[in-house]
Length: 346
Image (tube, rainbow, N blue to C red; front, side, top):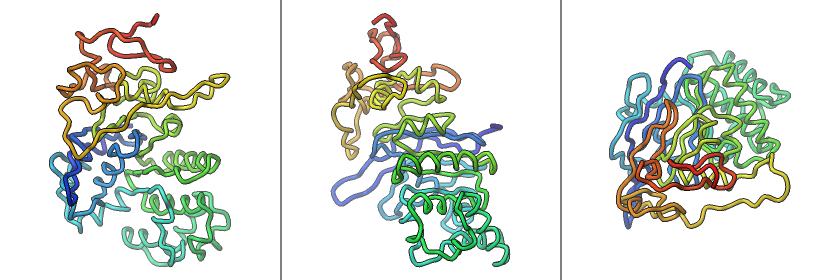
């Protein structure tokens, strides 16, 4: 990794509805480095996909409010780009792989032609050249008999093969950034592993930075170098993978880790769910968004939003447990370390 390729600063996004305003993303900041995989993880409704789509300017214009912030790519704020300027970015500089390949592919168009579209648009090559490149891409992503499959329709492919086609389309123009929004959720475990391995191999070949949107920590462990944990529209903890998995400091991160099966543990080890439900994001909360569900909640958590505490050059957390005045807490079972003042003998 040699530098920052994308920088998001203090991004706030809301949606207008008939009855109220949904505060989907609340002042998040993060960077994506060249050649790395950054995972943004959290429950459904935490704002992960909204963040991803904002980078492609794919949010509905009529109902979306970009209240504040910037998304800087190559020194330019993408939020200021016109629709025509974004057309030159999408597919060529920044591509996206969505969760369900059937909604990404045109069911009435042959697969080969769909792969060729972006090549013809962004690379100004001949139809014959685009055809050959598309065939090579299908073979590259592991589709057998690529020449014959060029003339097939999406419904003639399995779910895993359709997702491979979507990845081929996304990588056709060698984008600098690939946004993968829950790319394997709709697939079975075996195919999921194949797709993740494929993405890692292609990243090494194409040198693309990947922003991986997921709720699955097993996928994060397999794919990412850095992790941003998102809850109720806010990033509550960031760190490299080992810091998040073995030195987590936020109670929400602990909850995610406790609810994940552990392959190395023997016997029937119960999974511990996070109690309660995420907050109503149509209301602005004063304090920590996780306060209502946190087993370590203090009065200050309800009243004031915690500031970020820097734990290392790569690890930061927004939690009042990191304040020197906070009480000592024992770390939860299944989590290597606990809060700001950990009782290791608890």
